[in-house]
Length: 490
Picture: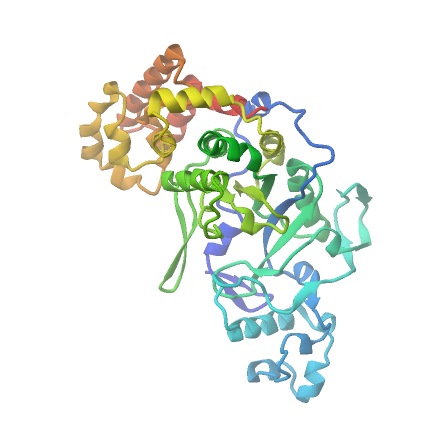
């Protein structure tokens, strides 16, 4: 557990995860991503906002950002009743005096305790409704700038400066974790700049108010291509889902290659409750994303997706998530507190432009050929088979023949058991890349990949085999990393 002496509250160790402190930081070496993703995709005047979810510990600078809608404690306890736990914070005061107390006059620890009491009384669970009730952003406040900062086109030298949170913080103020506990909050930073710039401005905002940077969830949105879907639901739905597959692959590869991370599941535990908080895209969810678009093309509007498809390095969001109609979104969930945003800025801007323009690196004609020649139009099988994160038995059973002889090694070392939730990137070494839309027509590249796989598996069998080194060498020598990144350019 991590103990915050200022507030007297215990924060579950999982909050360190949410703060991004166990993720990945600066690039390990010269960035392939910056070389492969072209620098001129930044949109000067995007039609749609980009939103960044910021999950932050409720330190005093953060608590200053919001206030009860009525300005006083009465706005917190709407029934006009002061709970005993709140009354104990104000010895000698009547309930009326307590309710009339201005929020901004309270010490931060009292604000936090009152929000904790409110959370306990909340009738809905975190999974039904995440918002902290009856709160709004302060119209204006003084920020004590400790380090000179550029933010939204203005330079802020050291000293006190007025900022207006509603200009860049939108929507509900939400609990960060799944227990209606206000020790951390989720705020939504939203401006009309390119996706990459918005990500950087969100970090500038945290610097401006004097809090440490946190990990980000960045939303890139685009209109659902309804007219194109109506003309050919399966082809256009598959083309968008296949692009989404490559975006996830790129984000995972960047984690490995740029930041020295791995691909694994992460869970948060609080008492007997365990919550799945992060993990790779599942093949079934990739198929569901395609189904969602195919059905819309056929005029079928099913149930809202809500959070069904968010769990991935890059999650998918349906139209129900957004306040403008007929939008779809990708939620980039792997941008850590220590990440070099120059790398992610290039990725975000590239994906944003490609998706908006529906020019997604692989032509519609090539997707059609791949789908019909390799899978007889079965888009669900095509997508599932070409996402490497299938189960270990499935991956190995479909591996190139040169690698099937290594099944005995897998069984002896119990590799699948040990790495079912950790180092799942190792599945790339056994995955059949020959039917991938990037490589299915290139026999020479297929052979290069197979040789790189064989070499990597031999290294893996050695007792001193280092997974990070093995994966870095494999992704470089096979050409998969470079080819994936370049394919995202519109």
